Every structure is written in C-alpha cells, then in structure tokens.
Image (cartoon, rainbow, N blue to C red; front, side, top):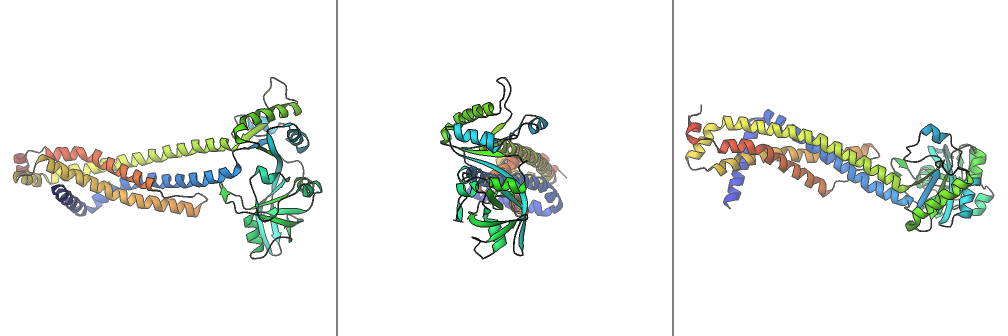
Length: 409
C-alpha cells in the first residue's frame, strides 16, 4: 500500500513538473517520440509484409522449379547471361518432359503485357501468359468457375483464354464472362475460365493475368521472347535430386562442355525467401539503428531536464529530507519522473507508429500488421530509457546533503 502511495505521489509530482515547463518537456520527449515511432512503425510494416509475403510465396509451391536464362539471385555478369542461348520449348522443354523421372508436370511460359477490352470496358498492362495445360499444376492455380486449358486447346492453338479474378471483375462487372469474347491486344479470345482471387506478390497483382495456349501466343505476339520452364517435382523432399537430374539433361541438350559452367539457371522460391530475409534483416537493423539514436538523444534530454530539475528543487529536496524523507524516497521520486517523461513520449510514439504503419499500408502495396509484440517492444524501450537516463539525476538528488540543500538559494 505504501509503495502505491509513493508511486502515485511520484507520478503527480512528475506531471506537475512537466506542466510547469511545457516547451522544455515537449522538446525532451520529442526524441523518445521519434525513436518509438520509427521502431513501432517499421516493425508493424515488416510484420505485415512477412504475413503477406509467406502467404503469397506458399502459392508458388516449394516443389516448383523455374528454368530460364537468368538466375533470380544472379552473381553472373548480366551481359554474359543475356548472350546465352534462349531456352526453348522444342529443345529444353521436351527434353525435360521425356527424360526427367522426378517431375510430374512441365509448363513452358512466355509473357507480354497487353490491353484487354470487352465492349466499352478495358484494362491496361495486363500480363498475357502463353503456356500449356500443365500450368495449372506447376503454378498451383484453379479456376473459380469454368475450366483451365486442355491438351486439345494447346495442340490446336484455340483462341481461348482463362482470365484473372480482377480482369473478370473490371471488364464484366456483374455479367458472366464464360463464353464471351474479349480483345487481348487486337486479337479476340473466348473466355473459358476465371481464376480464383490470388492477391498480390511483391507489389505484382496476380489477379490481372490472361492465360492462352503457348503456340497461339508465339504466333500472334512473336516467338523471339525469353521463355521460362516451370517444373513441378514429384515430391518436395526430392527437390535437390530433381535439380541435379534436370541440370544433367539441360547440359546435354545444350551441349555444355564438361568443365564449363551452366549456361542456364534453375530457380526456386527458397531463393526469393532468402533474399527477403536478408532485406528485412537489413531493414530491421536500420529501423533499430535510427530508433536507438533518437532514443539516446531523447534519453540525454530526459537526463538534462532532470539535472536542471534537481538544481531548481534543491531546497525542496532539503525540506523533504529535513522532515524525514529517506534517500530512497528521493531516488524513487526522480526515477518515477524520468519514467513518466519517457512513458509520455513512448505512448505518443506507439500511437504515431501505428498510424504511420496504417498510412503506409493504405498509400502503397505494403501491408501492416499491428501486433502485441510491437507494443511490448515499445514498452521495453520506454522502460530502458526511463531507468537508464534517470538513474544518475535521481542518485544525485538522493545524495544531496540536507543542510547544504536548505541553504541553497
């Protein structure tokens, strides 16, 4: 009970001191506000990014490989990689399909961006993907209604397409798109399916896609485009064995000499995840670095204002000691005052950090998740700053000689 009374008295004295010096208190707490806002805001944004990133990347599948000219995390000179022989359906695609024993689906893909129209409605910069019937397996996609491509569609180069959820929503509003014809660029296609809503991945809208047979794509939009081969492995456990098997097949069909490096790349989602972890780790480091500097500045400000407060209230301290206050009572009072100043800045910083995260989420493709751990981090920082930078002024106040303090003018 005595502890609660002392705590309440200390808090009242602390806020009386803050009210008495409003501008000084504002400037003192500003560093705390900036530091906590930075830490909470960026932590919330990264938490949201983590959630959306791993949800999106799981859709790619941990058992899918992507074969192309370029490595996603290339350390090879870009010009050297650009001059490699193109990946082709006839050579590499068919070789993998015929000779690989650890794969269950092979889907070559090639893409371009076109404007898609239906009657008076149109949607710009839609990704048009030319592929085969196995694309549904390698990309883990299913139609919400309608159907996917069949072998007959691909073999006969039928003018049919599957459209993304947003394409259907923007072009057809409340109409049923199945069976209707749309313009993809300047060519007409009949809609046979609409994909389920998939959301975004690293800022790319997965719902603005149109899928057509690869042979028809190459005929209409040109065959001199970079082609990627998506390969679904029979079991995620065999991913490394499958990579070795495909590497051997590709080196043979591309006639790569034994001592030369591969002139192709085999990519997988783990590469994106590893890069993402590196980027977020760096972002965390920057956030906590900036936040820590601001908190140190704020903490020094708290220490300065308390040292000034000790000087201004020297006589008051002497009177309190003369009527029975112990050193620990004075120490406790100034520590509470330090924590109160830190807490005030911290609470404002936590609120502003959440608002910053939400503002960034609403203005950009970045998402933000306000989690309890963000609040815990903020509270820990507040407590550390309040105690660390308040202990010296509090100790100085507690050690004042009461006789000398009473004589202080």
